[in-house]
Length: 310
Ligand SMILES: [Zn+2]
Image (cartoon, rainbow, N blue to C red; front, side, top):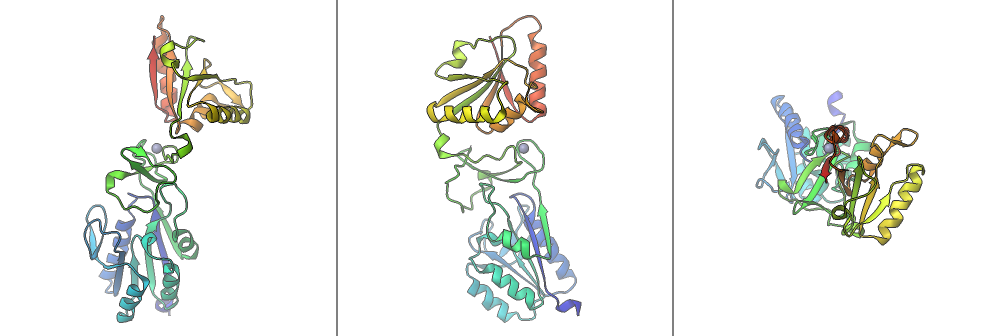
């Protein structure tokens, strides 16, 4: 009886998380067990040629390259005794694919689908959310952040080496170098309205005055840690409406608490996707030690900073 109960399995995650490898592994296992398998891959995804699903390491299983649900139905009707149906890169197949999966699960088939759960803006990517809800089993794989090496969360889209804007077109199967796996901290979605905004976070170790060279053309906002965090955010937002170049300046320690346990470092993290961090100091005896300590603290929080000594 067990054999007549269908099953939906979803393999998902960001790019470079090994979804296709995992799909291929499951299909091969079924194949070794002499089960009849049928595999589909959207024809839009022909990165490695037609008629196969391919992992990045060129592992392949034969697949039908399809662009419509009618094509899939026709092939399925001709193979009525199929036991396992594999579908790769399911996010590129037309709407209605969820219904098709449900139909064949109800007919007792084991349906295994692989696809991206998020688009490059880290928003849910149809039809994965619905498939994940309907699935008997969901495997969410993780790539490694190409910036820091921690578990990745989403796919970063880069255009000419720069993070893509939020309104750049959604679907574009590009070459590998256009995308990177990134963690939450390093995943960036640029907003068009801030395209020309330059934001610097300057921490001064021993001076309350900024060198002319560093503040040239910039509006300097001196961070007031007696304010609430929400008030500081409002202030920075207001300034963004008026100024194109802003320095958030502080001469307090980066571990200084602003509100509760929320420190200056936490504020930097919040703005790290928008701004460069500079640790600033006047040359004087032993300043190298506090410079190193500050850079180390920032580094520990995955923040990279430049040093500026005058
Ligand atoms: Zn990272």
